[in-house]
Image 1 (cartoon, rainbow, N blue to C red):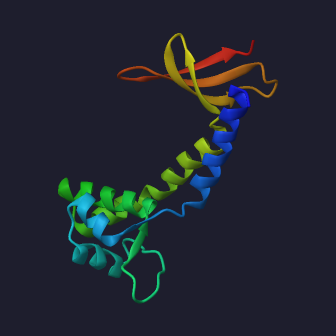
Image 2: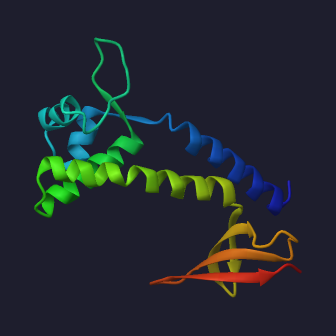
Length: 151
């Protein structure tokens, strides 16, 4: 398989993985990675700020990686001085933004390439005529959007 076919195959597989979001993590790991207690996490769930994945009664709670992101975001707002209710509201307001970002990369991600020795993300054709490609070029401390004519 050539490089372009490999990249497209990878992009297609990652899009499916990102759409399904079937990854899960246990409450113990959530507590360990966030510095929260398991009782705090259960309280947040009881209050409706987060959701767990349905499991059998005899199993520990499991959470999606998306929920882990929400938990971390809530905690960051708490650490900045917000109340739990305000922190949860702010974090949940970002759900739509996260969905949009995921959709953009699911729909547009073609692969990773190199331009002038710099790594870049190929986001596919920029125009309907398919004469230009849109790239995000990664610099050490910034990114640059670049439109490159198709050769």
